[in-house]
Amino acid sequence: MKIAIGCDHAGLELKESIKALLPGFGIDALDYGTGDNCSVDYPDYGERVSVAVSSGEIERGILICGTGLGMSIVANKFPGVRATLCHNPLTARMGRLHNDSNILVLGAKIIDDEIAAEIVKIWLETPFEGQRHSRRLEKISIIETKLNEGNKE
Image (cartoon, rainbow, N blue to C red; front, top):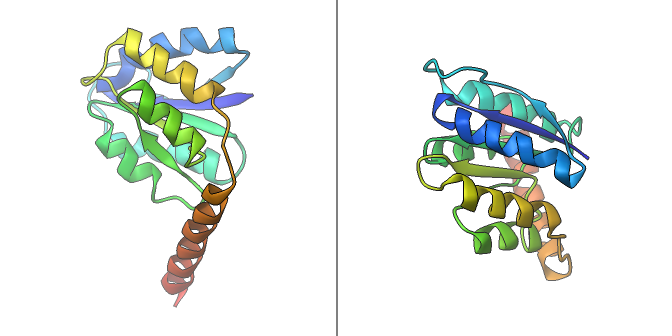
């Protein structure tokens, strides 16, 4: 599997730490930036990863900023993206199990590398449960379609 990974300046160190873990899961990480710790605007990098996931070019993504809040807001603007901000193993597990999360969002100022590694592992290994949750995701898809149709008028 290929995963798009991106961050702003606040998430750079954690991004590099996570990138080093991914080959151990058989994951090819495609780095969408940023590549240094100069101040950047998180929407630029959130958009890059979200477009790749929304278009189907990449199956899943990981976004990192200081708190994870900004990246979550950006990512969830894109059709088909189900970005989940996870700060602990439970939210990572439930994000995949019930919400079929396709973008994991992390806050580098909130969690350390050890917790982040545990979250990433759980998020990668937890399958979507389906069943009643599929119905709920379909409702979200209908809402997205209605909103997109409204924007075309």
